Length: 148
Image (cartoon, rainbow, N blue to C red):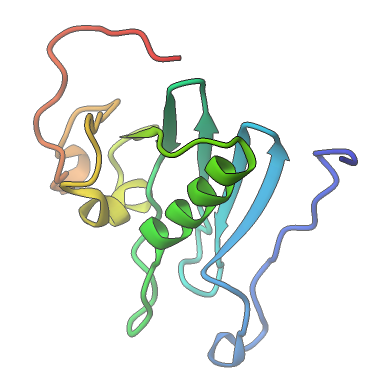
């Protein structure tokens, strides 16, 4: 594998109506770290999402921003595809997924609803409702736990 920092991020298009880039650019930083960047034509902030693999769990940090009108944000589909590829390359059948947020702003939480009922322990690392944002993961953990 080459230099993990040698990546050319997609910076959108002069005409987003003609943009053919995927919703997410996926960069495999190393064997256990994937960086996803949302297409700038779907949201001007083009947030980064991080998918981190441990021995027994996978952590998705943030779920993206609301895409431009008429567009779909396939965050769950993209994440599941990466997980399936990782599982196959490691001879594994499954791994638990945890979804967390760097903070509760809508440009980091839009895709949350796609994971409801599919993750064992959703975690919000910030107070819900910041700036009027209603977070689907309203219940915050009451204690602490260790994650691989």
